Image (tube, rainbow, N blue to C red; front, side, top):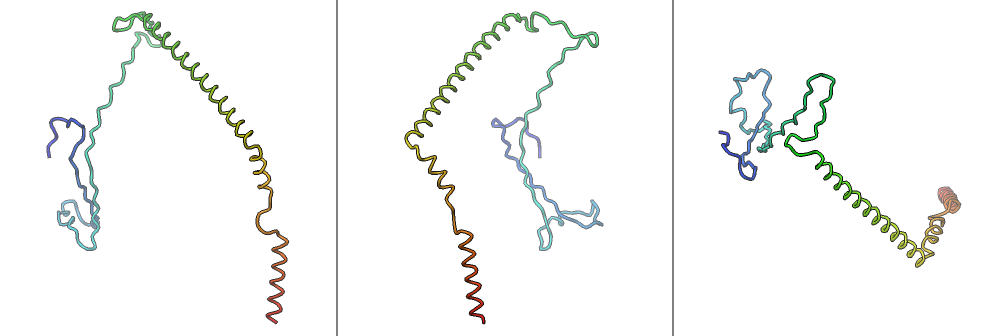
Length: 168
């Protein structure tokens, strides 16, 4: 099998590989294992695993770290970037972006407040339209459910007495 000279345009490889493994005895050497060991016969366990090829893009190179001439001394900041642009222009651009972000954040906070107020109004309307709904739930929760303990005790005693009289 040969390596491809060019990557496929969709970066999907159609190659598949079948890896087979079989358990051999301890005394078998590497030279003693032949193709006959992988024949499917009763009593032999042959394990198979299909593998596909996946292309992975190469990792990005690390960003360069500026080195100082003396150890322990930080490099002096420059007013121009390596490509010749003035830092002052970039700072002004950042300030406008910051102001825009603050306006958007304030707008979102106002929308949140109005949504919370609207939610509270709707909850109040539900309470006024159905005022007894909350009270009924509390009353229903306090009602006894099932048989009382005294009733079960009396039925149990009656069952024991009936069994005693029928048995004797």
